View (tube, rainbow, N blue to C red):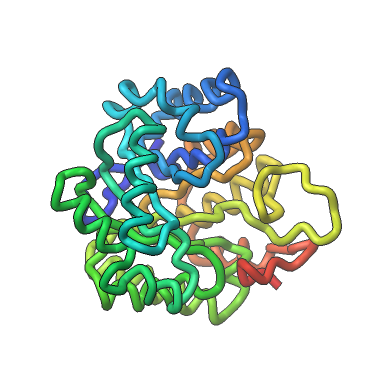
Length: 288
């Protein structure tokens, strides 16, 4: 699988990283299959969070091996310094790990939340202390939804984050406003040499009133050809790595697609955007 330099971290991340949300509700035997599948495809970057059900417990026995082979990125959704420190310590115990390559403020959805985590006793202070103590070398910020690019642009004015994580998705780029703000954020990150992690690789819309047959909160693309088009579009943008989606049943198709990645030219990219057809809207992803 192709690798790309993750900004100033200098890590050569596989273009698809292991989104551990997908294994949180699996048995250990099932999780072992997913983990080995990622290793077999030369995935070398892990994305995980304490809120991903039992994903940390599923990874704990693998950590001695994964620590040698993967860039470990973790996150906290806590908003105050003290709460974040408790979350950090819990994550280390649950994962059987004593340090991370990257630790991030998680799900910073709007300016109000950003104000909370960057306040005097906000969660950002815990991350700064982690770096000072050698527990994490790099610090980042993540978010999803319509306000993610705007919020992260403001965040970068307040603190020199090393990485960002936000949606870069063909269906979402049908929204002119979202596309403009996302492309602006990508440009700023390139100028500042900030690592870019793109999420929601195969989101196509919302669920509506239909029963959910996947573990993702959005309705994902499912066929190999659809996944190829959406993922190759995403990987043709100026990003560095894309965490795999939260549905285990689709992991093999995503890894296969990433292993065959071919960059799309400008015309092909526009064709993919224009071809997106969401059965049901998902306003939380600007998909209408």
